Length: 219
Image 1 (cartoon, rainbow, N blue to C red):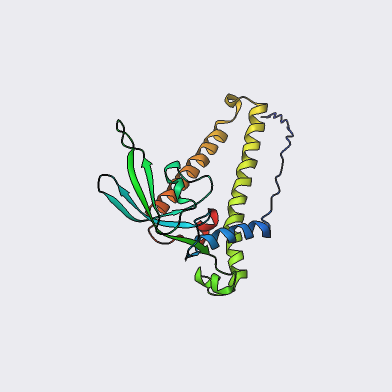
Image 2 (image 1 turned 90 degrees about the vertical axis):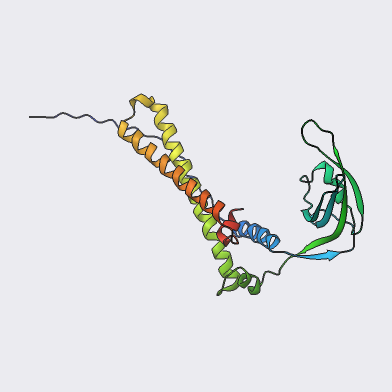
């Protein structure tokens, strides 16, 4: 018997995104890691942005919270703790805290214990050793930083390309016209991605140890 088949070829235009991880990108991540592992040194001046203030919080009901810490970041200081900025060790700062629902504000006092500033480690091999890099020093550290960044970038670019393909198909056909096997396969991929992401998040929530370098790079 004879089987006659006809095929139609449809040409679609896909934009291939080209993004590179630059040395400047790695420098930015290195700077974040330096701040995450900074040593805090006590200073006698007034607290400024970037400092960490250690204080006790005394509530009017007689309760207290000891040795609380707050890193002063611009735009991230609640109004009731704004007095920490420009404070000095030994100061007692009266503040008003929001009370429980249906009750008025709570009077409290902040007693500043000390003001500290970050002392960043020099970008030397000793800093890489501190992060668990046994050989290769800073150069090896930069390579380890680049690898997860590149992996994440590649994943994002693949997802963007996949999105382009789906959008092009939907522009040419309604979803009812697409082969069911194609839809099933895509749904399977989505389900696997969701499960993988859930497992990764679960692992992170269950960890009590110090974050690996790859996780610090993502931050």
